[in-house]
Length: 459
Image (cartoon, rainbow, N blue to C red):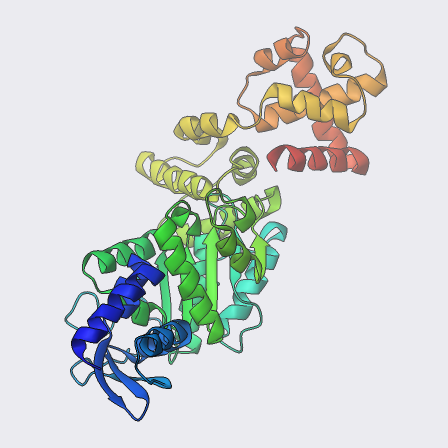
């Protein structure tokens, strides 16, 4: 068979497989010889030869025989001038905590150097505070970080902003690098994956891209929702996913919501993501937030040994800043820095002055009206009875609980709260708040009611 005849066959293959597949898989093939019924082709990499053999060999054989050539099988040989460079093994976590890349290949060519996202030395398992909302995600992350046989693949961690997804992803990468330095661990964001894919398309280097991404032992992709709606990127991600799973390589994914809820994510990608272990990081509860603050305070003691924190400040912050752990940690950082600069104890007055904007922003989630509705539903009474003038105990106690929660969970003043409760005086609100504080100490049922309502409002 001549090169001209192979060129004519390529035009038929183009019409059959489409432009993208042709450019990626067929065009790089170089026909070498036809020997004893075997058509020999030169390919840039072993991976490409294997892929074409598995996915396009029947079609190529059909076109060859249909053109009059007696071909029984295809053979692919890597071109002598296209060596496949092996990747270096990972190294353990640096002792000086210098932030490294997860993997770099030894190559001058930018497409051959697979630059990963840097790992944050603060994000380790040791610094991750575990509580009920994240204990399952933590346990699953711990399991895959052991680097043993794949037990669930992929592991998908999902949850809202600031709940610890990225922290766990970095912790897994650090632990794998320490335990299994022989493994090729790659951590990057979905945006980086998409950028590398587009770059490879533009530079006509898709084979290098495919070889690099499919030669890893552990692939970690953060914020996978960003590829939703990017059809070509999703297709390549899907094929990369399949290739790694077929090789029993571990895949770890994070997203801001469950795979089935990501809009514009292809069904086949959703299906693949859902076939492993999908774990939700729930919104933090009061105990977890308080634990995070206490851990951070111990860390800050090294830099601010002279600062004093008044009783109740951490509890106040844990109650009031409930939506985002990053905001909570940032608030504490600001508080320590401010108190150090002005030379004052961190008390409630300084806390409210320093964090006025943060407290106002966090208060938007929980309103007085929402608290009133939750309390009336919880005690199975009408909202009008919470706000109304009736002083029966069955109405008065829930009303006082609602007032107490308004004082704790919003930044509304006592007069403002009183006006929302049927125009009551601020002294009535003050009495109600004080009464609940007293009852919490001696009445287990009241304490449980308040805590259940707080969790429901902060969820």
